Length: 372
Ligand code: G3H
Ligand code: 13P
Ligand code: ZN
Image (cartoon, rainbow, N blue to C red; front, side, top):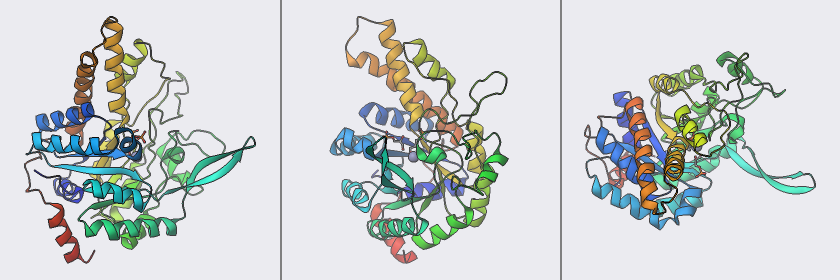
């Protein structure tokens, strides 16, 4: 089966009322683990590569690995997606490589700031109109190739820098109500009215929303007042609901959705790692958000934790071994376990054979019929 346009995978998920994991990859073991998990659970799946992943894998290697994956499992619908594309040029590179979907992340822009006498690059929220303009251009081009486009409105927690959400005095917010209140003063969460306008003005196929998640392993500054243990980040499901009410036909995307399982953090720390206390996005919160239109759930960190933990454990227990296959096999198994668990939890399991996959050419015709 050739790669499938992501739009179809998400539309089918909308019909079925389930979510689909979008898993980041950089190497062969991750791709194999995702495909084994999808095969075992009979799941459609989204494989995604960031700009960093394309650079690391030198693009063509990743493309060929994905081609091998779809050839080995022809019954599994797979979309290949560019994660956090920063420009039309990057998106075009991915489209040329054969990706069936791209994200244009116009929510942030680079600015130069001076800190301690040194010039540094920093990311700040981009003006809404500018985000619309950049995204609309990508949509115009991508749809000509039948390629799906994901856009983003709002900024992930801590302005996408991997920190939890705090108020203006730096005090961490404790409840979902706090987070909703904070929106009155800050642009952290996606504004439902802006989300609706953004989709109308750009024609994106899927919309990433900021609802309290953030990238990486450290997503929260909340601490239990007595035990001082780190509490999970607050996820504003009420905000997802409000956005979904305005644009019920648009699949919503949750970035920063790793659950950072304690047992994976423990394995790393028991085997020489030094990860500080942390907590990820509770699976139940993701499942709640799926009820209100979240269809694509981005997970990268959990796979990184699983891989690193398995490698550390193997090498600690077998200090005389040095064949990479010896430790990459348990690493692949550990990642597969995470993927299987997520595919079942998000609801995509069992849905691989529900529909006849479309090609990019089919999608091209559909877009032109829709006038997009
Ligand atoms: O968006 C964040 C993803 O986890 C990708 O991370 O840019 O380090 O590949 P990366
Ligand atoms: P995590 O860091 O929570 O896995 O999020 C990954 C992501 O959002 C990729 O775009
Ligand atoms: Zn992301």
